[in-house]
Image (cartoon, rainbow over all chains, first blue to last red; front, side):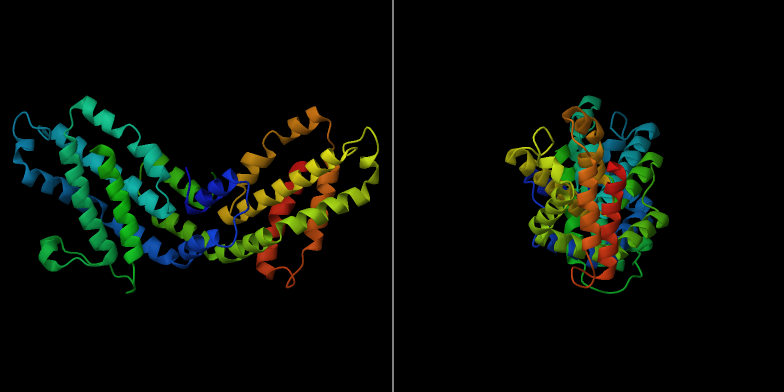
Length: 184
Length: 164
């Protein structure tokens, strides 16, 4: 498993060169925006169960066949498995966001996930849709762009210092896209 | 690669939980010290060749017999390899400063070093001497800020202890 720092070390080692000068620019920005990053991770972890249940609910609302007899979220046992998987994916994305590198997500979550889903008969299209909804919710929470209109009864805004977190929103979004790409 | 972040993530993953407040605080502590580490890494990277040269010269000055026939540095090729090794060690220290942990030194420098040196018949004493010279030669504020120097020297000490 790598983080942003060890990633730069591994690529420098491949060239037997020290890490210096321009390589350090990205790492300095990680350090400078460290608090923002921790707030972003916190935005995901604090709202994890809401993000996950909302995504699975949304996925089913768009495709109600999933909870009818023979659907992949019927009976409760399989619905529970679906919620569990959503939480696992979100958890690995939170690790990747904390580390600033996707290696933990790739190695421990995505490697073989598509093959497993195909073998188990899980519809990967629906899985990708649930992840896409999680992406929308998580990036809205990180960037504080969510509104009461889209949040409904469970609207929540994180009480963090206002600032520009577009880079982190983009980074978190990229991890969700990575999951979508890996399963579809 | 062992670092504060990967340690925290490994522990959280083993327990199957999201990163907790404790984890975030641990990472925050690491980030607070990172500026000094990165400064030391940058300065070391910029002067790596010079530092290597000085360290090797110090070692061959102190142990001049190493260049005699039958010793570890009896040909220019072997002498060059000593300098190369010192360069590698200093590069690994640069990596440790970037990562903020001893992972690179442990995995790429120290693991198996004893066996390799023994099988090649190389003495580790001269390496230690060269690294001690490097440690004592570095000073603040000429080379880097005091906190950066502290980080740099602590990794040199770690390596010295491992080779001693």
